[in-house]
Image (cartoon, rainbow, N blue to C red; front, side):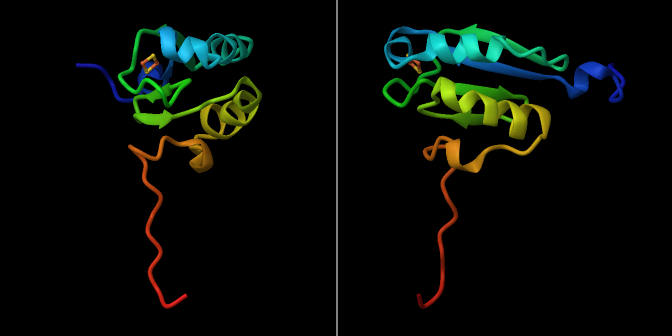
Length: 108
Ligand code: FES
């Protein structure tokens, strides 16, 4: 059994789909942008199809299971700064199918 204080428990793995549909939408540039950062507790991996073709480029951050859709390479700096470094997922970039925006209740 691993110790919870093991440094690996703090690591993130970020999967960037490199399958056909996401590649067509620019996922190679997203992967390259992520790989350009030296993030000691983050492993960046090219992945096969993540099963969400047509909403890509798809990016999945583990272990939190935060999905980002239609990611642009120009958005990678905010993803790195806010989520990968700051541990605050970027709500505006999340995949709405898996992270629906909260419904607003009220009269207005
Ligand atoms: S090709 Fe990227 S999710 Fe299927």
